[in-house]
Length: 480
Image 1: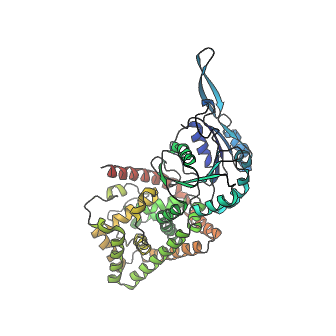
Image 2: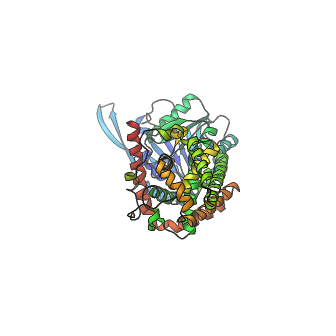
Image 3: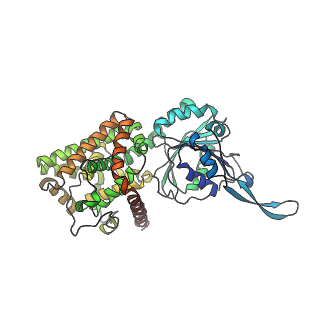
């Protein structure tokens, strides 16, 4: 895969075990996104072909409590090496152990030519401060955190000046096959030769490489993820506050509602820090989450006051700004009813229930207020964002559905109590993010997570299938 070489992997989180398996088997099926961990890889000979017998050796370390269990888990991991006996000109095969568990990060950092930290944003400075001094002379260092500002600051502060910095970020969540997904490559302080080497190493993921600066990365991830996460987190908070399991309520089953439910549960099934780091440590994300809360509040007040004309004018102004001439396009929508209806956690009612879709109206309103055109960032979009954009497009580019949505917002009180809790939730998430309070974020997230936990297994399975099916559908449309 990489002309052979030695890899060293260090991790402080169990999700990296899959990456070790991936590298030691030289396969890339169903790779989860890098988790909360530090990764240190070692390519024994950085530039050029090395002995095939050294190919894909993985050394790894985790937190001390997992040292013994990992040693047992990977004790029999070997690689079959084909060789030719030069004396007798006979083909032979030998076995070579290619995963070695080490006791700490210093042991791997001091001998590593490529070091990649995949640590929560809140811990990146402390981890780099600890292991940075052990970095090998002339090594290449990068990171996999979702927010690059604190990561790059930590590298510049703690790494030796002779070290090159090439960072990365897989723009998709756990359980999503990385093949074809965007992978940001950030050459912050490195030669072209070193950047090319990192790309060769990461090519095993079969992802689509996108070159960005750290600042551009943070802006794009905020544009494509921050508000999307805020919307789903707020929906989950509102349902939990109302003691609702939406898949048991007919008005929340079918079409757009299936996407809302499945993706909300998908987010809450993950670890809290995955979303807290992006929201709190990315300055652009804070601004956008605050605007989303403002958009939710202002639109809800218009609905409560029965101000139909003002609400209509505002919704159509946002539609014009975000979708532009797409509203008149004759092309097919990204998502269709028959596709959306396939992924229900409950039984679909005989007749669709009208909804004002406050969460969707607010996100387009937010994009309009911030001057964001979501289509500008499709090359770096996550599957979650593409689905969210798909259902907003489904609503805004359907004239009859949008008109129904506005009429429902003014004349139908069915969702009024739910929308009140949703507004409270959006404002509360924004406040916690603005205060930069990680523990307050964690407390709220984990409380809601425990409420929905009994359905995570089913929701994750359905959600994975939904994302896979819709992604394939979108790719086929693009190919046509």
